[in-house]
Every structure is written in C-alpha cells, then in structure tokens.
Image (tube, rainbow, N blue to C red; front, side):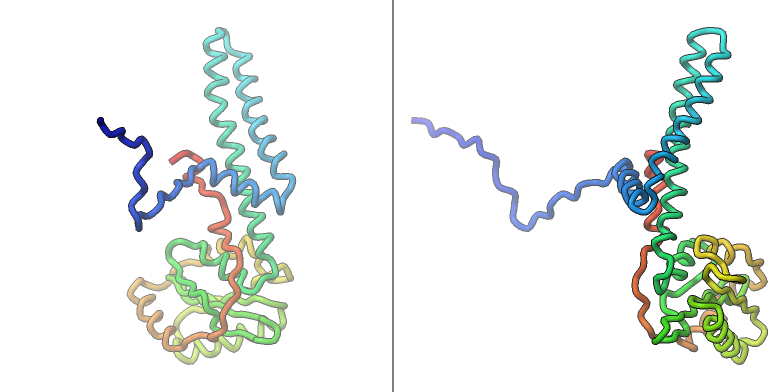
Length: 246
C-alpha cells in the first residue's frame, strides 16, 4: 500500500534570519504625518489646502481649453502636481514641528547643526559646559574657520563663549572664530535658522588648513559631559525621496 505524502510545509531551517519587511515610501509619509499632527494639529488642513489649490488651478486652466481631450489632459497633469504640493507642505510643517519639539532641550543646537551635510564638522560632545545650569558650548570647524555655538540664557552663554574663544585664540591666533548664541532672545539665532546661519559664513581657509586646525583642536579636547539625546530634525523630517517614490 503506497504511503501518502504529507502536504504540510517543511519547517523553516533553524537559525535562518526572518525576512525584514521593507518600509515603503507611503509608510514614511504616514509616519511623518502622524508625528507632525501630534505637535501641529492644523497640518491636515494645510496639506489639503495645498492639494486643493493646485488642483483648482488645473481645473480653471481646463475650462479655458477648447476640446474635451485637452481639458481631461490638463486635470490629469494637475493631479501629480497637487500631490507634490501637499507633500512639500507636509515636509515643511514636519520640519517645523521637529524643531518645536527640540526647543529647550539640552543639546538641541547640535541636533540642528548636524543637519549640515557638507563642509562642516560638529562633534556631538560640547567643548564647554556648566553642569548646574546645563549651559553648553559646541564647536564646529569648516572652511569659514571655527564656530562656537552656545545654549542657555544670553549672559551665561556669553561668559562660556568668551572663555572658549580666548582658549582657542591662545593656540590658533590667526584662525577666524565666529560666536553664535542659540535661542530666541535679542542677538540670538533661533533654532530653525541656526544651520543656515553657519552655512552663510564665507570660506577663508583651504582644505589643508582645515585639516591641520582640526588636529590641533582635537588636542584641546572637550567638556566630557554627555549630552542628552534629543530629536534630530534631520531624522524627524520626512524622506523627500521616498515621497517622490524613488
């Protein structure tokens, strides 16, 4: 009598890594929308408004065309532009929401500064710190020279920044040093504009000079004070390539 073959699937081999579910672009868009809505409830109306405005322009253009075929074509072409307009608004609102969540957290400025992708090096560790008040100073290096960025109330920031600037001047007297106070007070740079303020600085050094200055700065060391991890706005903002389906 012939044996019946079992139809049950063979068990997966032990030790085999489970398949990782791929994150699709629309999953990233949905996550960005949920994160933004938690801080900015009006984001839904901004996105829908941008979508409706562009689509309305396409419909108005279609009404002025002579044939039905051209009218349909104008609306079909307008739809993807309307979607892109909504995604653009979502990206900007998500970025603002991420900065809003960072406000007031120790290490917020370094999270904003590390969104600069090229030309600048900002280590995560501060170079000066006040353990009681949690005022911090971060140091960056680029072709525009050395940048010192402080966190905290204006008066306390200024003292820490001045002390660090004098320390650098003793070792690197001919290197330009720019001092920036991060915050919302007078003569301070708001967190969303901090990276742009650094990028606007004009380059004065060569790449070889930057490398040599970097070696001497590493010898100075830092404050050796761990900075609590905040929300990185670069990671919090939606993936724009993913939104375009790439």
